[in-house]
Amino acid sequence: MNRFFSRSMRSLSAFSIGLLLASNNIAAELVKVKAGHLVALDMAPLFVAKENGCFIKNGLDVETVFFANPGDNNAALAGGAIDFSTNPFTLPFFAANSGVPIKVVAAAGGWGVMEVIAQKGLELDSMSALKNYISANDKKLKIATLQGDTLELILTREFEKLGIDQNDVELVYFNDLLAMVEAFRSGQTDLLSHIKPYTTEMVASKGATVLTTNAKTWSETTPNTVVSVLDSTLTKRPEVVEGYLKGLICAADLINKDPIKAAGILEKGTYFRVGSDVLLSAFASAPAPISFVPDIDAVQSVVNDLSALGYIKGETKATDIFDLDIIKKLEKR
Image 1: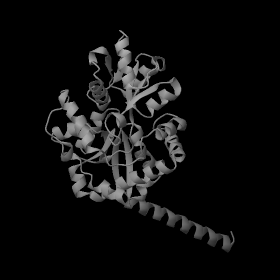
Image 2: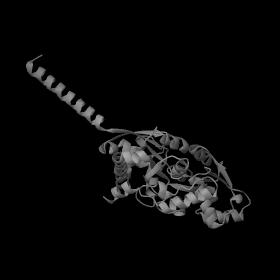
Image 3: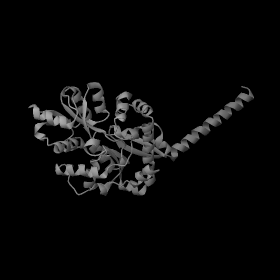
Image 4: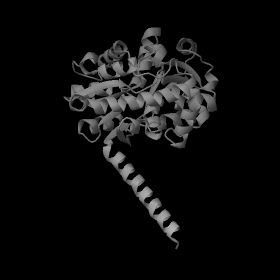
């Protein structure tokens, strides 16, 4: 081996070692946190931030942890197994009423995520049309939903608003979100109260029609899910909470400005198991760009409904557990 080649190899080796050490130093500086989640379109910022380096840019090494059940997600946060929880906005109230020192720091990211859809053959295009159908037909329509969940409450609010007697329909309760979709897909239920992008897929593939969304039923910025932490995380590690929220904002900026790229990232990660065309359609039908400050008054009104139905007990108010100071500050920048 000639001396020039030998020196070059030594230089290359030193360069490679330098890169490796730099990489290790960066990894060592990142704060490791775990984020529990379900699967709904408003969790897209979490997934994009994970895949596109938005969390790393803000000093975090985020491990995402999937939960099939919102209750398990809540329990993991309460027990300290995860640092952040993305869950339906009613779940923090259950936790707080059980004595868990929980704080909601932001909406998860996305509006109009919940939808009530109907089978194509029913030719329904609104909840008012559903009322007319019920009045004109003896058959009880079967509606797939989750009991004690916002997916049921969107129905009960519309029923009350329009004077629909709940006894004139059949609510079919499921424990599994994907099983609900399959029941609707196979025609076992007539209506489905569910979330994007799965409702979007039913519209695209089965010709289903959208009767209402949570944006229409409650308000434009009523969330589907929210980001929660333990109070100790917020008070003792506010910089970690801020870094996490900055990561979500970074991802939302990409989704809002370049949804095609974002859909490609999400499809590549197989988070939703639907095609990029469905994801793009789901993003396009949102009533507003992704942001993270929710309508607390609307949240409280839904929790009041939950209490009236006997699903929740306790005196916890939205103002007791929603601490939006950090996200409001970041969104003003």
